[in-house]
Image (cartoon, rainbow over all chains, first blue to last red):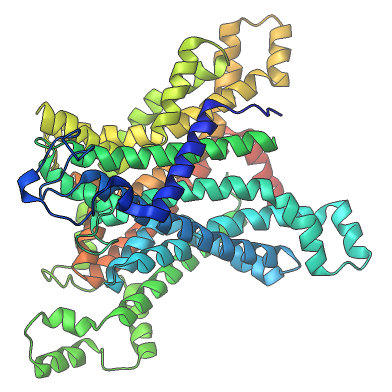
Length: 268
Length: 312
């Protein structure tokens, strides 16, 4: 087992702390309001006085909009992951413990999600709801992706219940709650933590793709997906409008991946 | 090759998924809005809306409507598009070739790049060149497909003006969409081929082959690569299934008239019959692609063939 800290994990930690700061302070960190329009400073290039990452076609500060988008995307992805994790783990655990019919239901559900991809489902649900807002997107993403967790938890927990030490504990009359708390849940932590981190990265992509298509965030909101979509019209004059959100997204995803990879190596 | 019980199980799952998907869609569509209002369009009088409600049967109870819809779907009747009145299923089938074409080209290029590169990476753990390639792959895995697409358009279509940025025409319009899809899918496949090659090199059968005096080249081509490929078939199948459904955003960016693009257009227009038909066609294509993947696995791997026989 390697205990030394790789540069990748230190970088991921820095990104994580930055995320936390943005979650708390939002666009205030940039010194601008992300909605403030300044028509005298339209499409200013990065490093323009007062605008580190430049401005957009209405003279709004790109950094402020990026930070606001980060708050939205990271917040939505975190909550969606938490929802998927909670439902999926609960369902998986319940099915693993003598839940014959739940196990069968889970198998069918897995077949279902494999042929009816969750992103397609999310697009359809949100577009048809016609309600675009933070919770509409977050809840939908969480509710359509939880089978990922239940599948893994079910498989691992079922095999745990076949192990001798768990069966022995069960035979001594240990209550189901204690059985889960002492023998099942701790054994699931390594797999689950890796899964959570990778799922978070996927949710960032899904949320941004939805707002890019114009079905996620409300019209005019400063989210990464919406910024990418608006920036397309100015690709030639102002490439920083698309490059900013693109690289912000990539940095978060790479950071999440390296945390996941690190956790995976730790538990091997 | 397949036992009949396995095939029956597959068909039963398929039927279940189709029915479940159509049921979920039906209730979503009915619960989220009044379809009569959509059909009537803006500015319709209450009498007109009422007439449409009766004409389409929306005035009956939800359960009756559900039964009728499912019966109609069973007969292959998906209804007509609400935007232009053409048959919904026909509309979807007309846009399927574009998606299949993109998937076929991306799959071929993906295999051409990933298999040799993965095998090369898997041969050794060390070396500056290999480490550099691995670093690039790690970063590339952080790029969502649609972000790559936007960056490529930024560079080649807007900046350098070498290639058209959108549309579905001659070979020049294929380049950017195919590269976007491949640069998103290839890193995963490369890593799997790499891991499998590495594992196969350490396996007992390679040691045995080496002890019989086989050359390193023979070992690589005859023993290691076939086994590494075998492990990659499942992922290739999953990537194919993904391309048949998951290219929603990339098709939209390039205005590529496939079923992903059609899904977005029809959901935004609240064109329910077309949404239903798109999802139907997607579920069927994923099922077929999974069936082909399993067949290929069984064809290549005597162990899976044996297991299928033992199970029957």
